[in-house]
Length: 132
Image (tube, rainbow, N blue to C red; front, side):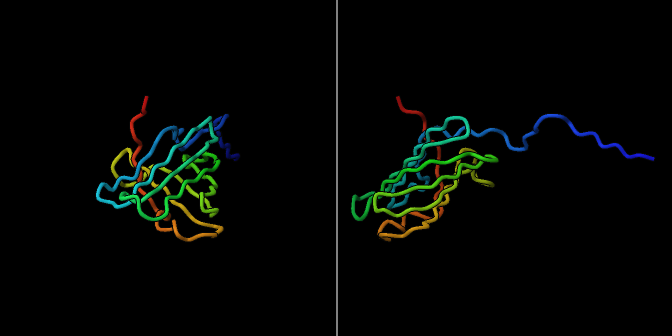
């Protein structure tokens, strides 16, 4: 007796396409920090920029940029900041949280100046409405 397994032709995706295009801002309204992220996505590739600052204007205010790719619904990118630190990031919809929230994970892989590190780590973001 022969066992025949039938598999569908083509590629089935278990993760729907995610559109990361847009502007994101840190969610915590009581925070003394401000964090902003912008993503320009073309198919599965993305250009990413970010900036951070203390709400009162004190301390370091890093800016950064990088390029990345979206795979399995997660945007992964490498960055370099204005303090010459380098690292990796992932951006993905936040699981178990309110819809519309995104989790940004920032890991420094080359530390040159640690002064902006308090902005890095895990950051909860919300996609902001498009601006004209």
